[in-house]
Image (tube, rainbow, N blue to C red; front, side, top):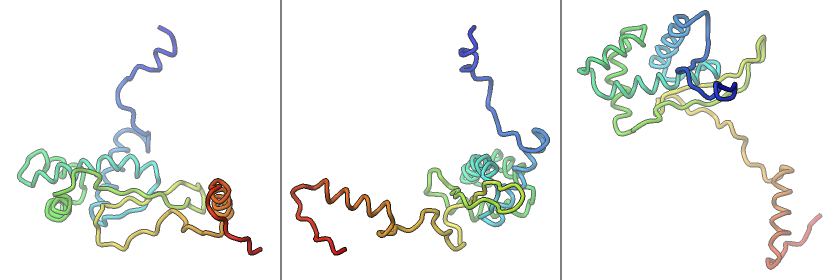
Length: 169
């Protein structure tokens, strides 16, 4: 078998290697999920937030089944390290997402850390939380920016039948 064919073969799900091993990775994800359920918005590194996102979605998906479902209770008991958050998961978060079929978590990239490692950071939050909204990561449209001025000039030149505005400069 050629090397290129071997590269295309899947050998199971690959996870990000965070920490000292698989147990360390699971413990870190459990702590992050517990913090997310408690505060409904946390800031962490982009890799951790991206890895945790699927687990947070799955936790809410199972919580929507109700606290009488044994599998849902097992998952909540495993992933939430603080057991006082289990009622919040079933009584606050699950009813909030009752009509939604997915996409319970929003992740937004924020500026890098200034000190030490310059890690890429992200804010991950449950949708519909009572916290104030995050500022948009996109800059406001400035009509006087160079790119917008060039686009406006190109639009005027590209429309030959349109009357052109007189130049005031």
